Amino acid sequence: MTDIKRHRAERSSYLTGYLLALVLTAIPFSLVLFGGLSRPWTDALIAFFAVAQIVVHLRYFLHIDLTHTPRENLLALALTALIAGIMAGGSLWIMASLSRQMAMGG
Image 1 (cartoon, rainbow, N blue to C red):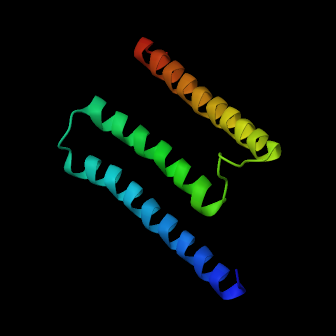
Image 2 (tube, rainbow, N blue to C red):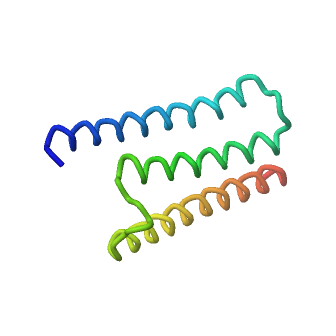
């Protein structure tokens, strides 16, 4: 593949990823803005689109494809998932603790 074709393919990949990221961001914003669904459904759909957004970023911007991923990329993904899980779990734990303490009045 020549350099021009490779550049066009790479630019096309970035453009596709950008458009998908825009759509996957706009949908949750519109769900919250227009409020047509119940709170649990809205939360579930936001979580689903967040995971889809992560997959789009991994595939189109970081060029990590899990079908032919070297071991180093797989370990980096596992470490990233572990750190993100610790951060999200810790944040939820702190918020629940603060909510419980505020409900008790102290």
